[in-house]
Image 1 (spheres, helix red, strand yellow):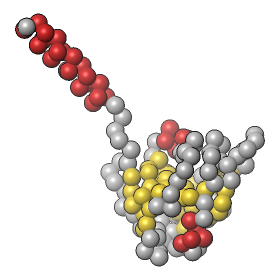
Image 2 (cartoon, rainbow, N blue to C red; image 1 turned 90 degrees about the horizontal axis):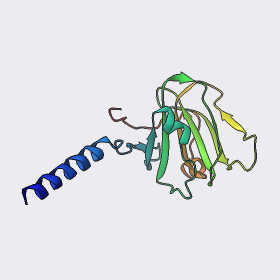
Image 3 (cartoon, helix red, strand yellow; image 1 turned 180 degrees about the horizontal axis):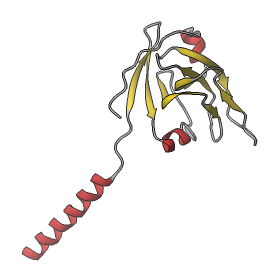
Image 4 (cartoon, rainbow, N blue to C red; image 1 turned 180 degrees about the vertical axis):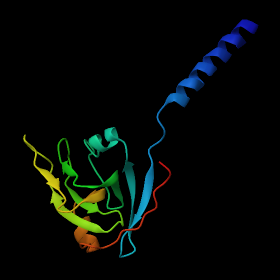
Length: 151
C-alpha cells in the first residue's frame, strides 16, 4: 500500500512539473476604436508568434484581431502565406495612431506571395477581419486605445 502511494505521488509530481513547463497561455488585449467599438486581440510578441500570426485560421469575428508588437518603430512587412481568410492590415506608430492601412488583403494563392509594408515607420501592426476598416470608418491618424500587459 505504501509503495502504491509513493508511486502515485511520484507520478503526480512528474505530471505537475510537466504542466508547469508548458508555455504560458496566450495573452490578449482589448483595443478600442474611435467609434467606441472594440476588439479582443491576441498578442504576437515573440519572433515565433509574429512569424506564425494567423496562419491556418479558418474564421475570425469582427470582435477579434491580432496585434503584433515590435520593440521600436521601423518598416515592417507582412504577407498572407498560409492564410485562409482575407484581412485588413493596420500599422500604428508608437502613439497608437494609424499610419498606414491595407484593406481586404487576400490570402496568397501562389508563390511568390506579395508583401505589404507601411509607407512610414510603425511600432504596432493589427490584423482584423476584412471589412473592419470600412465598418469602423477608420482613417489615417485615428488613434486606437489599448493598454499592453506586462510582457
